[in-house]
Image (cartoon, rainbow, N blue to C red; front, side, top):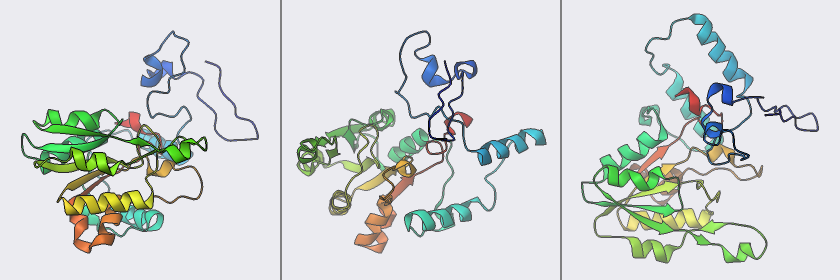
Length: 258
């Protein structure tokens, strides 16, 4: 693979050979003339600060069991306040080994065996698999193409609230939300988020919101709004019906460190 060197003095340079390190995205199509865009994985190096921290740990030389640093929860709370205008308590944070574990634990915590969870489709496959893996059912609600935007040459999908209401079952306990949505790349509008919050409150649904792509909104103007913040705007105690999944793996390209 020939290194890609962007023009205009940009600092991003693609590593010349990721296959040497068994990069999953490239291994899948090894030896084929295919550009692998099937997985959320960047081909740029991680930030220098991350590489420096890893180098320091390697130099330390002991790779035994570790705990989350004592100051990390407080630093995350400060980060959320600064970047998302969201005030959280440090003791709300639960450390997990990965997003997929979080989706499955959310189903396990919120649904009894045989009950159902809603999720929009198309979606990252573990959203549809988690409920069956926990002895529950998934009700997939197709997103609708935004026809008005399509006429402007913009591909955007929106929530179809009629479909959502029709999919609701008496035993539905949970909405598995991907926000921003993967893979269609849509940002839900303020009205859509408010409508979803109202729907969940009216129907006594718990919500698991996957927000790991929230720092990859690239238009330079749109701020991410955590879904828990939308719920809290309805009533302060409504935030208790939400689980937010967040992590550095996507925006800082750290998925392989797991």
